[in-house]
Length: 368
Ligand SMILES: Cc1cc2nc3c(=O)[nH]c(=O)nc-3n(C[C@H](O)[C@H](O)[C@H](O)COP(=O)(O)OP(=O)(O)OC[C@H]3O[C@@H](n4cnc5c(N)ncnc54)[C@H](O)[C@@H]3O)c2cc1C
Image 1 (cartoon, rainbow, N blue to C red):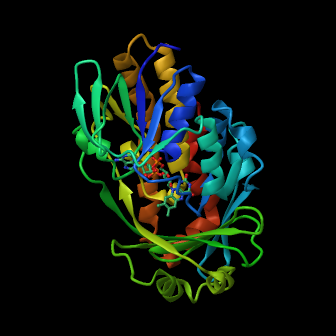
Image 2: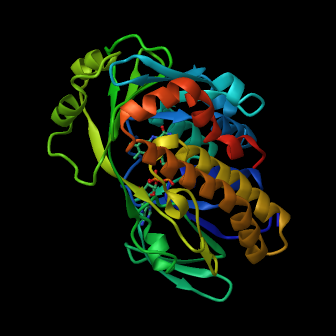
């Protein structure tokens, strides 16, 4: 279907929507992209991208533009709560032949994706209803305008309204974690991905270049605290390693709960879900962006190769299911290990933590 004049609407200009728009443009389509946010609100957060994200960026011809940003990460260091070593994963060896692991600011990735998508996002354009027609979709926006498309792609995140409007699923399920993130500018020197594992909580610090650290912490639970900074000090105040200095340097802390989305199907008629709208998980394995980027590559390839939109959507879903299911299942596995008391868990991780953690990415090392 390459270059066919398909009218495509991408709803959502996050990592998934912009990646899909980029991939579709490379395949000869000219999608419209809308986002309900009134303007390009760039998220001042950090992001760790494992090697399969780099491979997908390369397929989108965006690895060059991303490379000046952030920092290549060579090792994952796992420490106990006191800061004593548990194990290390050699990322260069694990992802050899796939791609470099990188940590960078979300803003920088967003800018690269936005420019790769052609830069034209219609902001403030929230979809309020859709009509599933036999071979198209009628879309009504909140400003009352109506348009008809041959394909609508819901890339509108874990709380997707396209998912609800197309009767593909309801609200996400709480994944059972409260997550905190912050950028630290005058913190300690940390040169690699470093996680301290406590019981039912953990604290991660990753350098993202220009002397900045991306801090991510989580605890089991579903209630967001009123003062997230105070809660971090309460939870991690007695941790060792770089944590005390990071806590001292913390400024603004974002807090949220995590969502999980598990659907029986990802498309109905000419409406398809991608990214977190289709398969959100807790961010424990840092695979959300990589899965969105891979979705984009595979969707464009499926549309390019198929004779009809229906055949493309079927092919797309059957290729993407195994990898997103793997991420969800391994995320759940890893989250369950948090319930194991450190006295039992830590000797195991000292013995073979590198193999246990490396194994969580095994399927993702293989081809898309
Ligand atoms: C604390 C935390 C840390 C994380 N860390 C990492 C990490 O290190 N590495 C990693 O890979 N992943 C990480 N993730 C996961 C990652 O952020 C997500 O998987 C990824 O951002 C999903 O992108 P998306 O485009 O599918 O959804 P979103 O980023 O949610 O984007 C959805 C877009 O759709 C728009 N929208 C919503 N509703 C509508 C509507 N009705 N009409 C029009 N537009 C709409 C929104 O404004 C938004 O721009 C983390 C997540 C969290 C919560």
